[in-house]
Image (cartoon, rainbow, N blue to C red; front, side, top):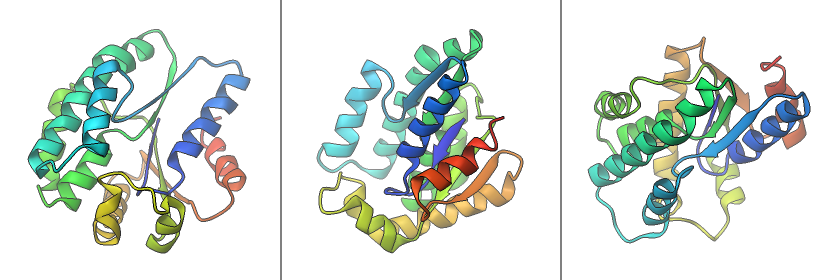
Length: 193
């Protein structure tokens, strides 16, 4: 399962709450994030979020490299042993942020990421939706390199996510993230019986 949404949507909180609930039910859960999840991924995360300017294609390639390592080192081994994997961001983030948001092309970025993951897609993607004003208020003044690109980028990304959800309704679950975290978590938990 993956959690997607614009910055400040609450996806990280919801991923953690779902992991805790499923563990309480006795399931083995691997909670991970992108970029990150591996030593290489964490180094890439630092570069992408806190480094200097990165061109759009370099950004997309770095995310893809981190994801390739993440799938090989963490996600596929966990799935092979029967664990539930919950990932805070995954392939759809790159397609939305770099493909649509940065204008590289949705299909070009999707193709790159499907290649590096061996076509691995989540069974369920929770899209936590919020408006730009709520996102800005939640993110506050301390912003990483991508968050500093602000509302215009977030609007393009949010529109892309809505298109993905409409195109794959069996995988995507759209959730109103403007509600209290507990209400959002209860709705999400209902899809994970």
